[in-house]
Image 1: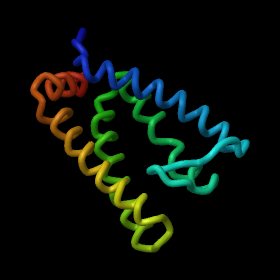
Image 2: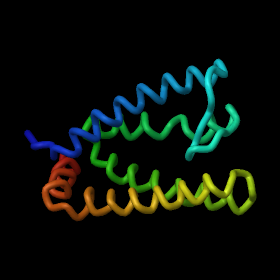
Image 3: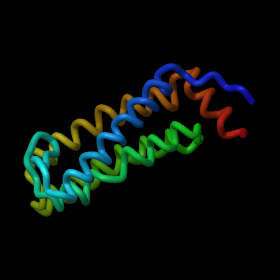
Length: 134
């Protein structure tokens, strides 16, 4: 089956791949404790950065690159988990409230846009429906 991949999915695939490469480099630098460790514009410890930031982009990049139908669900799950995780860590005062609010607001805005794009934009929704039939 020859599906025409939507343009923005193609762009997101390349962006996710580049971001994953940057993330792997950042992880290597963090393991060696080289450079600052920043999340949400705030400095964090090396351990915090490694535990929170590392795996997300690589999994999403893999899903888009291999045209997996579950990749769009993973994007939405990631945004939901960011909101839940930031809320819990913020409520327990384990992260700065500035980081918590920035994460919640960003995840809500970009998660909402992602829901529209992946589930309600007609050509993209049709593309993923066809992927599910493979």
